[in-house]
Image (cartoon, rainbow, N blue to C red):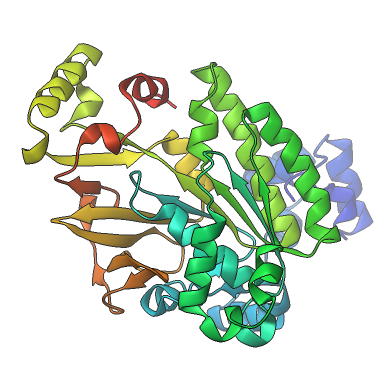
Amino acid sequence: MANKLINQMGLPKSIANIFTARNVITAKDALSHTEFELMELLDVGKEEVTSAMAHVSEVVCPPCQTALLLLEQRVRNECMAGHLPTRLKGLDEALCGGIPFGVLTELVGPAGIGKTQFCLKLSLLASMPANCGGLDGRVIYIDVESKFRSKRLIEIGINSFPEIFLKKGMAQEMAGRILILRPTSLSEFAESLHQIKVSLLQQQVKLLIIDSMAALVLGERDCGASRQQALGWHVSFIKSLAEFSRIPVVLTNQVRSQIGDESRMYSFQAAQSRSIIKDNPATYDSHLVAALGINWAHAVTIRLVLEARSGQRFIKLAKSPISPALAFPFKITSSGMVLLDDDGVEMKGPEISTINCQGLSLSSLAVSSAEYFLTKNT
C-alpha cells in the first residue's frame, strides 16, 4: 500500500497535481515528509497539507479490527479452516481441535520415541469415513527412512477402531487410501512435491506426512549455505502446498545433542564432552535440540516435542500461536499413542524447548557427530 500512487487516492485534482509536479508520486513519498516540509515543498497552506495527509494515511493504513470481528470472520470462513483430531483428548483441546489445516505441524524427538507411531495413527484418522469422525480422503505418506509398516498400521486400526476395521474389506480399503513415496534424495523429493501438488486436487488427498525431513536434508553431501538454501526452497514449497490445499501437513524432525553450553564450545571441546558421555552413558541425562536449525523452526506453525524423563514419555506442545506450552505424559500401546493425563502440565522457561531423553545412550538418540557439525550452523 505504501507504493500506491497519489493520483489514485481520490484527492482533489488541484492538490494531487501539485504533489505530482513536485515529484511526490506515491504514498511513501508523501509520508516520508513532515507537514512543514510538505508545506515548503508544495507551497500550500497547513490546512490543505493536513487534510491531504490525513486522507493519504487513511487510504494506505489497514482498518482496525476488533477481536469480535476476527472471531466472526473465522466462523464465516470455517469451511476454509478446520482440524484433524488426534483422538488424544488433552492435546486436541490444547490445539483447539487437533492438527490444523493449512499450516506445517512438526514432530520432534529422538529415535524410537513414537513419532512414526503418531503419524500412522493420523494416517488412519484422515482416511477413515466421515461418518466415523475421519476426513474420508487419501493420505500421501513420504517415508524417507522406510519406517512405515503396514502391519503396524492395521494393528493400530483394529485396536483403536474395531467397529470399523473388523468389517469385511474395510481394513484393505483404508490401507489402500494411504499412498507411500520413498524419495532417496532432495532432488527426488522435489520431483515428488510437484507430483503431489497435482494429486492434492485430483485424488482428494486430505493429509500430507513427511517422515522425516531431517533424514532427507542430512543425507545430502552439500553442507553449509548451499544446503540451507535448498532447505529454504523446499520448506517454502511445502508451506505453499499446505496453504493451497488447506490440508494438515505433518513433518517429523530428528534431534542432535547439546552438551551444557555447547553453543560457546569449540569443536574439540564438544568432541571431548561426547567421549566422556560415551564412557558413562548410564548416568547421563542427555539434552537434545531439534535438527535443521533456527530458520526451519520459524517455518513451522506447530511444534510437538516428544521426550523421555525419568523413564516416562511426554509430548510437549512447544510452539503454537494459540495454545499454552503444555506437556502430556503418554505411552505407546497396541492402539498407538495414549495420553496418561488429559490436563497437561504448563511449562515455563527453557524447558519449553529442551528435549530430554534420560538414561539412554546418546548414540541411539541423536544424529551422529558428523551430522552434528553439518547442522550446527544451519
